[in-house]
Length: 262
Image (tube, rainbow, N blue to C red; front, side):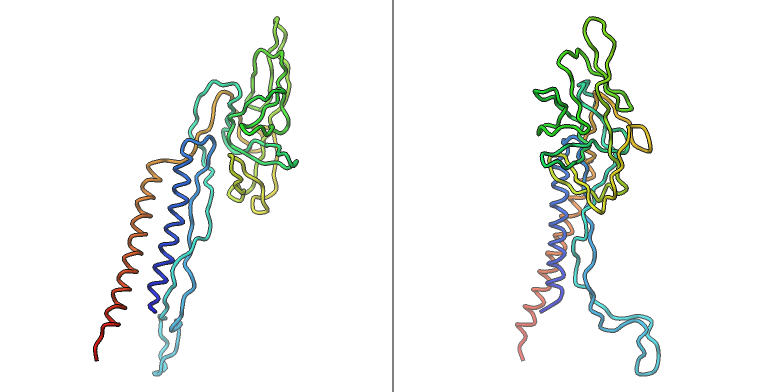
């Protein structure tokens, strides 16, 4: 059987995988805080018919070898954590991270997850939480008597009170930072979890120690660029088509060999 059949089949499977990644990017073009992914590939093992530097029958060293590869395979999907476009909403519970850092989210099992999506809501107890009801960590509760909410760039949260009372500080937003953001594991629902590859979590006040500042009444949109993804889709489609044509050409060659007459 010709190697080209299996090699081209591996090429079609890698391009299908790339299409899956690109499709997920496009599906989340309007997802708050979404970070696009990039599929990465590597070539498979090579069969060495003759190694470079081989000595031939005349005692001469051959400068080149003879080798043939066996296709490609996915090696990684990398999250690209570039800053998304800023959307002004004027909603007091819409919070932007401008720069490095993630909001910390407390999960029901006691663990922490992390997100760039700052479209928070207030539950029935006044706690600031995600759309799924998971509270912000450290916990932030807005008293019922508050008539206004102010969130400073450094994460300090103040409320305004009725009858001309002075502003009252009710909490502090802290952000988490990682050595390797791409090592975080996607959990869905705009959440990431830490792994050994992401490195140890570093928690700090916004604006300090290389951590980004926060902005109130603003959201970070997805960093997916539709035009870029569409171009990548076209390239992927053409690569898939080229591999399918290689399979057809290999099949035609085998057919010719089978139809030989003595």
